[in-house]
Image (cartoon, rainbow, N blue to C red; front, side, top):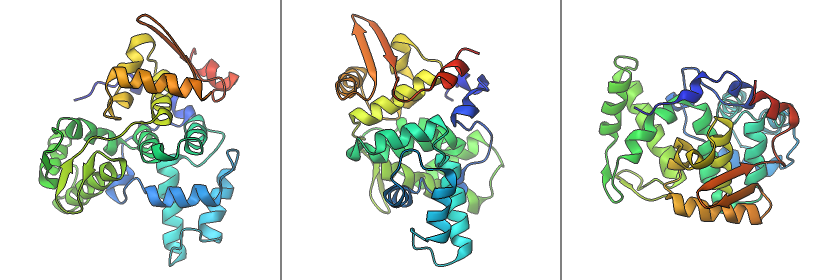
Length: 265
């Protein structure tokens, strides 16, 4: 099981991370299409939580049939992505979202991963599957049941596994509608920059920035991650410095002074 020392850093909840039990994947996937439509409807980086809620509930921008479905949808989207520009995790997602269109599926996955414990629980299972191998839903069910014995009924466990498989498919780690095959995700400059930001916020520095679960989630070698980080830096999305084996990153366009102070409390 993946060791996560960052779970012990309480300041992360102020930055948007969610460490508590639960998880949207008991009912939904990462809701990629809904997120795409919502951010197209409300594209402003500084939009308030109320504006996102108004777009979903009052304007019905996601074309839900009932008020109940609209309220459930905004609740689940908020649980996955915060939908509050005052929170760094979401503000950074929107920042990279509008700059790196091909990277959007992985950007969504990274944000949801920082907030959904069930998605985090499934990472090790997915990463252990060889590229090209069949990935059976029942195998994921057994894996989850081993991690959390008796937590879910058989029906709920099946639903969770289906939702998780769908999320990993949206992100590019799996392919196929019914029979899933492990595929290699395609990282981008924006998704690497966002993964490095999450790594930095959770305490990684230097070479350890390339060895976090956020980088692993992108199916990316360390060398390719370095190349994409340099590209992101050239684009002005982050500051990336590499001298020999020494690596430094910073995010002056994203991290406020108040947020920076949280990292050193």
